[in-house]
Length: 256
Image 1 (tube, rainbow, N blue to C red):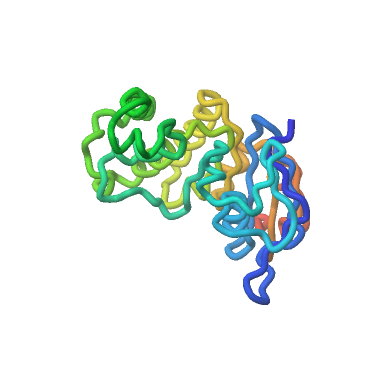
Image 2 (cartoon, one colour):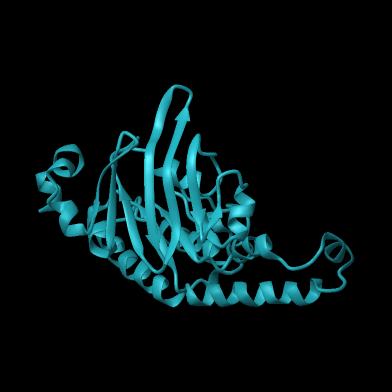
C-alpha cells in the first residue's frame, strides 16, 4: 500500500527552482533513502512534506490525504514524525519534558478542561506521563529524565530527538541526516537502532543521509537528487553502479 505519494512536486525560492518535478511512491513499511550533494533539495522535500514550505505546484498525499496547504501541526496530527539535521531539542527543558511536550499534538481534552483540570484532563495527563516514561525506558534514557537536554552528550541528544518524534505515535518517520557528527562506531550502532525502531514501532521510514555506509546498509530503495532533479532511483546495488550517480555524486571510491 502506498503510504506517501508525491506527484510532479515543484518548489521555487524566488527565481530558483529548489525542487523540480519530484515524484515519490513510498510503500507502507518501507525504509527509503534520499541522497545527493549539498543544495540538491533533500531537506526542502522534507519541509514540503511536513508543511514548513508549501509546494509551488504538485501534490503530496499521505494515505490519500492532501498535505499541500496543511500546517505543520495538522500534518503532525496525521502521524508524521520528523527529526532535523541540526538537533532541535528544547535545550533548557528536561529530558522528560522534551518527550512529554510532543504528546500534546494529540492530547484528547479541550482548553476548558485543561484550564479547570476537569473532565478528560487528568486521565489524559496520566496517559501522557506514562507513555513518556515508557519511551524513555525503551530508549534507555529513564535515568536521565530530570537532566537538562543541553547537558546530554551528542549521541544521547540524537536518541532523545528520535524518542520525541515517536511520542506522536507516527506511521511515517522522517530522519534528516541522523548520522551527522557521528564516528564510524556510532554509525554502526545507529544502523542497528534504526532497524530496531522500524520493527518495534512498525514504522515506514524516509531518511536523508550523507553517510553512504548507512544508506547502502539499511535502505531498500534510494532516490538520488542533483540540483533539485531526480537523477536515479532504485535498490542500493543499482545506485552504486549507476554511471550518472557515480559521475554526479558518489565517485568511484565512495562506493567501493
